[in-house]
Image: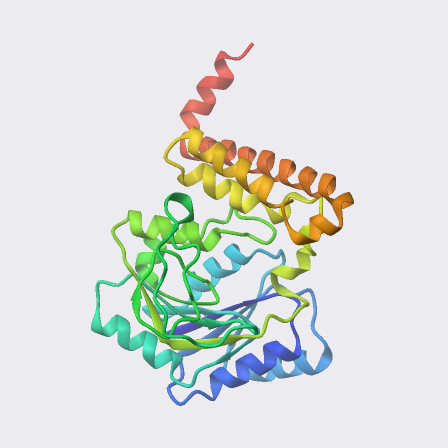
Length: 311
């Protein structure tokens, strides 16, 4: 198994995460750090350089931040048949690698396993999934802090182990997701299952997610007060991609726009509502442009014919 850690804007916590993974009793065959940070502080730079020179890790740099692009880069560069993606601000359980590996060995037909993720406000609990949501929101309410093992139709990329060749066969992660890339994980799970794959949740392959306030996807700032499309474009794009009809897609996008301003924050800070609505409108239009660009790539002949027929 190869571990791949995409990272952006993290220093001390990144070094601590790597150190904990190198010290696992059943370590991975390799640890790949896909670094999108412009620079690190001196202690972190020195530590990463040392680990890289001693081949404890493979430290790769990418010039332009993108979570999906960095994950695809790690997926292609990995040397193992299984690739475990982890966040850069975690504390892993001691047997995380062993549990993921054992699940794939036990069920060779698995395409992916997703491990338990404990957020700072959560405790591990032996609970089942409510399975209350359907359609585009299926398993959006899945309890990733559960201690149980079960089938799942959604994933969290911060503790996700994929069969490398099968993940590559469906194109990896969609690099059209921008900014915070919200819903890129669900979109990947959808394509995986459409290809005939299955996903297993492992309640004993856990991490504590530290949710460090700086770096990572949080470099995009607060979505509550932003007019940027970066926060919502992924969700709108996901709906346009996977809805069963244009009606379902547009209804989903409209509900999202309204839901984003029906918050406790906006109730007490109503002057931010027009700003947020502007951001959501821009996000929807950006998602439509992504869909048009995608269709041009998938159907170049149709695009050429359309251009030839235009006055």
